[in-house]
Length: 484
Image: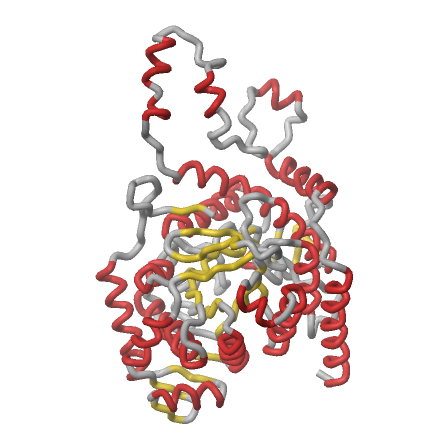
């Protein structure tokens, strides 16, 4: 976890939009919700909203301001996720930032061959083990969409792999409502029951919503189901400015924020006090030159996170990604700057580390490199402790202008505190050459291989592994018999 915006000036401060701008976006969102409304593609959701006072016209739902304001008083300010052992691992709120991978890349940049290929379930397992081992990675996502399992229920196999190969919190994605239910059932099997998982959730669902003004049935069903279960959720409608919303950042963000507020209202109608995270990316102009859904665009950086800070709600952000297809200069710049802006704005759960090519490709070495970038950013944004010990006036007096500080007890106490990267090369040219003259990409690949060889995750009890496998097998039998 990295924290910024400390009031004692012991951390970095930055924001893209001020309170006045956020207030205007909020008021515009309220007007959009009431005057224009959102297309809600689920009958149960429409009934709940209608009974609470929303105006229903077919699938169009118009939500009055008082429903939004009431929901904002009951939705929690923090999402707490635990590790497999029941220890609080992520307190996602305020300016606490946690970082993890992404899900469902259709390709992997193989660091052995240097070629792009289709991923397998073993790649999902390898990514999970890697993220479990890296100290700056706080949570795990599936990384890849494996082609060697049934594509209709690939997410069930991903979830099984993650539960078996990490003890860190998990963010999961499912293409359908049934997959969300199956994932929760697997988590309940690991936790020892529904109540135990609800009390200390170690996984949460990333709900993909069509857009700010179109709420698809699967997203609404997941929202209501997770709320009924008392489980935290990441309710994420995304807009593409100039495509399905105004191209201006303010107009794009206002309509996208309207959809986010609808999700918060619906969740609180189902179960007051259930936690919901807001989106922390998009909300700005689409790349209308290429018509590609890029992951790192300058204009959208931080704007949606600012709205999360305005509401004081958890933010599901994005960072450590690139639209480059190779581990080149563009890759390093975009991965670093997206991590930096997410961190400085205070995104709480920052995903998609290791994503490339507009999310179509993933890289294990890039995940490893981003782990080092985060270590650097942690050191670069933390405050400077100034007290009697750190000022060390007595040490300066003792050694004077010409004394050697190398062997002094004060140096021994503090020399391990600075950030020392395991990947950045800081040696003279001669030492670098003696050690092979490797690039950072090569060293990152070597680190990946070393971790996969040496890092071992404590396995789940065999009985729980069997219970999870039964759920996956049940889902496979169901999809085979359904004729889908």
